[in-house]
Image 1 (cartoon, one colour):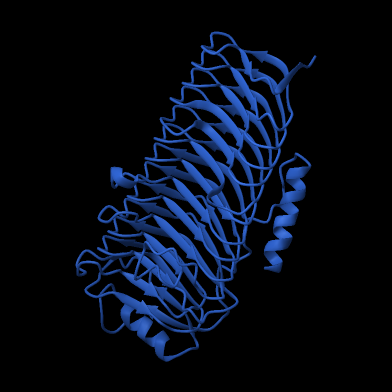
Image 2 (image 1 turned 90 degrees about the horizontal axis):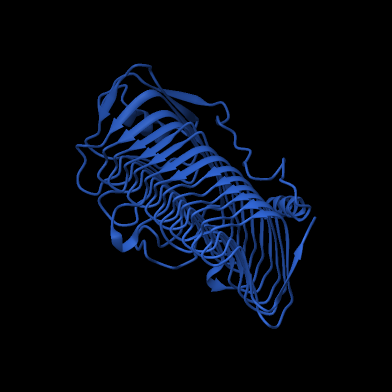
Length: 479
């Protein structure tokens, strides 16, 4: 927890200063290779027998000095007849050299590869496909402590019936995926994913994701996703679910989240869904991310109970999602108090089809909103363009600069302070035209004071007028 506290403090300072963090604490420093140890070599693509992957795993079970399994190059594909399970307690690296593990012959519900010993795990250059269950499962034992490190480098989970990859530290999840229990091990998770893909997984059962990381008990969930493709998964493309005390600390960069969540209209899902419950924060950084054509939100961030949401986004595109393109919800389901602190720059949220706005920030409990939104395009959404809202005790302080919000069904830009706090909003150099609502709207509850400052605004052809405010808001036109 000391590491998380330092990281959160660093990002909080950067956001309060209204400048993006260059050293934000969002990329866990994971070792990509375990310590030197013995090697078991895989020399055949046979499912079993001498030189097989199954035999290499059995060798590692019986000899704790084995810390690497290395496949010979060009072995092709292994047609699994039974799942492979690693239960060893030593850290292990698997170098696949392009091997394909195919689970098409497994029995209904069976997963291809499971690691359940609680040790650090590195997997490189490996594809797992067509398993009727989960492609790769990492189970954290309830007795685990410290930090468990998982690295996936050039790993591809394709066409598996359930999750593509599941990393689980929630005690009841495997027996009851709908459980709300926050119990898990005392360990924290550090997960690094790079140059990987999660595609067309989870198309047999509801709420099965491309990559899912569950953390319960007193530990942080730290994750870094880079240069990865996440497409066409039945549930969320990526889901981080952190419960009890502990924070969700993550970065996503150079990654595409496309067309995820179509499995059932009863529960369409997102490109990426981050849920944090219990004491802890959501601290995230997005850079060079595309979240398009997903069946609910493109990016869906939720912080519940006590804790803050602190997000930096630079270069994010969210197009044609069926709900909001980008949504922040603080105190989404369970109020506990906390702030939203956001620096968003070079954002495109166009053509989204539902929810409240193409880009939405909402603080529902007791807490403040402090947001800087620069170089944003939010056009042709069938809802509003940009919405910043604070609902309970707390202030709303926001700057929207260099914005283009055209042709939205609703307001182009809206600030909404609904309770005893104060509104202090600025719109600097914006084109907010041809919306069915107002170009710029601001609302202030009667118990607070509201101030809207505007400079260089073009707002023509709006159904609700260029600027619309209620009696609680004073408008100042800046030179």
